Image (cartoon, rainbow, N blue to C red; front, side, top):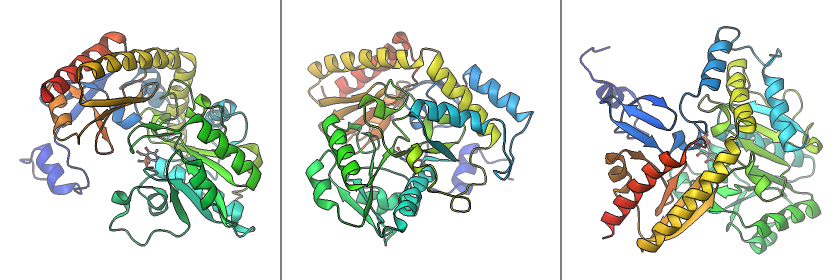
Length: 395
Ligand SMILES: Cc1ncc(COP(=O)(O)O)c(C=O)c1O
């Protein structure tokens, strides 16, 4: 390696340009991260909804360290003593069923799609209805499920069998269903699409329709699951249980892991030889996820998320009165979208300069996904920066 190149130059030369990062982050603790120049940022991205317990929480770091000295990886041809324990935590909270472990959100959704197709294969059913404006991942089948053309452009042809209907529109789903429909795939709260919660009535009716027509209801909880909305699974906000669902992001607090859960009824659809993953559910990933989920479930994290979520919403609604550019504040728990009256433009950069990292969602939505362990004082730091920048930009 050329020793004279900086990390940035090395990145630009050797890393594929699918991202264009400008800031080099070198350290994280709690809700803060630091760059190579020593600048400190309040992190309202949590690595895009991943580090729900903040950066490097002792419980997760210690679990990773301990497991890394014991057993890092064995194939799923053998059992390891972490995977069943993680499956039990996830399934006990799901109300029964089984888990399959993957490495990412897209891979977990691939599992959902395969589960549905396999189940429908002897009935001649394979079509999946997913929502417009949705996001399900970057593999070819999850791109085909994704309901935004922007992501699919250049990768045609789509995988056959995906139909998109408007989000929260029950009649459209009812019309789109035919004898070949095998499943309906929904994010209970759309993340990338603009932080848009599903209507309760919509999900209840879709659940009923799926029961009636013998169609699988699939939830993509990759972004909204694992405590993000103040309950462990986002569907618990609605009292609607899917037949299967995908998890990833927050599951390992930064250690890559995804999961596919099914209810008991569909537990034996994917039989030996039909689905697999070399790394999925290895002991190191599962140890990280056990520490993460136990902390979220047992250490008051969900309660803090609800309390601070309410605080964010009340403060942002006050802000909306002062700043007409804020059209709406929406979301659930600490999954928050601030809908603006125009595209974000340089907003994220201006916030960064003031020491706040935030995210876009859609064209006009500023998305906040702070760690679920954030305090009121830390929230205020970020909210004051948002107030200042949005106020100045729209003065
Ligand atoms: C709802 C949802 N599904 C799937 C994915 C894809 O997850 P991954 O990037 O881990 O493949 C994402 C990522 O943003 C997501 O938000």
